[in-house]
Image (cartoon, rainbow, N blue to C red; front, side, top):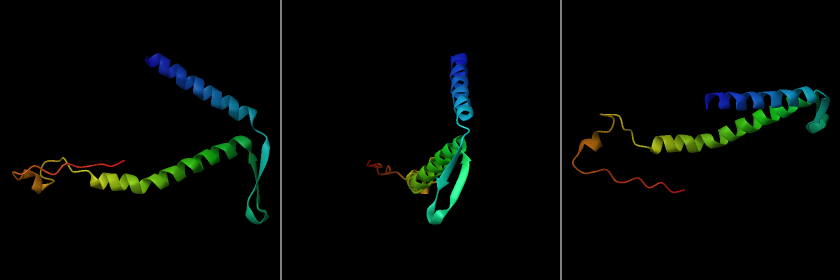
Length: 95
């Protein structure tokens, strides 16, 4: 199984490497107000993917922080109310 995963990773790497070698042509990206940027196509595709990934992470951050602070702490002594005789109220997570 370990060798199969290495083979899959190698296949993905060589496919992306061949894509990069085949797309070295210079392309022009036109921005607002007549701004022009020229770069290799593979660099433009890579930067577009990286920007989309960063935007997705930034959009999800508030939700991750909200979920992280809503979960109870399971460390011993972190929640003194958990040591009482009444059980804590169940958490309801709506999707």
